[in-house]
Structures are given as structure tokens and as C-alpha cells.
Amino acid sequence: MLIFKVNLKKIFVNFTIVLSIFLIDRFSKIFILKIAELENKVDIYLTPNLNIYLIWNKGIAFGLLSFNTSFIYNIITLIIISITLVVLAWTVRAKGLKRYSLLLVLGGSLGNLFDRIYYNAVPDFIDFHINDFHWFVFNVADIFITIGIICLVFKEICFDNEKNV
Image (tube, rainbow, N blue to C red):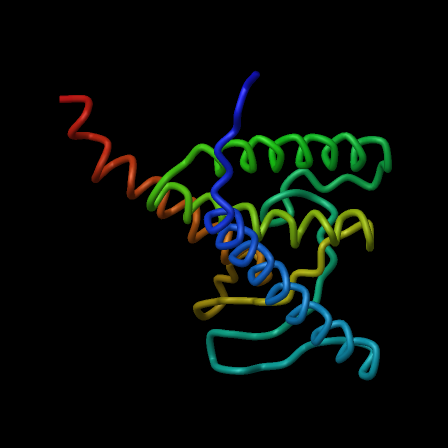
């Protein structure tokens, strides 16, 4: 008989982190969508380099692979679900910085995945720009995903190099 050692504290911490990221993302999107509902648009200038501007993203990261065909949209959604499940599996096995980095990616991914399924698009609204150069419009989930990936790259470069020497 195979006995699994379940660490309830680790499961609770992981779940709390992912749920917190998901809820922060959801609340930010709900807030922006309520403004859009009241004003019929969202176009708020916060600073000379930061605007809140609502767009609907049917693609993947930063609007890449946007298609109007529902078949392609559904295929991309299935791929994103598969990748999210892989990240979940990696998170269960990971430790330390790698685990927390994957939790950031997982929480953000679930936030955007929820939107893809519920709205058939992801609301993006953070418009960072310098003069006329505008970065892709993004959302809070994208911030968590990006920070998680940067931490994973940092960990690989700075900490795992010692093993490969």
C-alpha cells in the first residue's frame, strides 16, 4: 500500500497564495469593468507614463495570437489549461524560491484563464508608456506571471549554476 505524506501546512500556504493572487486580480478587473459599465469606456490618465485603458485581449500574453475564430480561440484556451496544469504539477514538487515563483505564475494564470472562460477574452487595462512608445496593455495577473517568471530565471541563473559547474 502506497502512503502519501500530506503536508497540510504547505497545501494551505500554497492555496492561500494562489487564492490571494486570483482575488487581487479579480477585484482589480471587476473595479475596471464597473467603471467601464458606468462610463461606457475606461480611459484614465494617472501619470505622464501610466494610463488605465480597457481593452479586451482574445490572444495570449500581451495580445499575441489574437484570432477572431472561436475554434482557434478554444484550442489556445485548451493549451493554456494544459500549461496551467503542468505549472500546478511543478508547484507541488518544487521547494523554496522555485515554488513561490511558480505560485505567482499559477495564481496569475488562473486569473486570466477565468476571464478567458467567463468573458471569452481577458480584460487588460494597465497602459505603461514612455512618450509615444506604449508597452503592451496588461493586467494584474500578467504582473504576477511576469514576476514569477523573472524569479524563475533569476533562480536558474544565480543559484542552479553551482550544480552545473
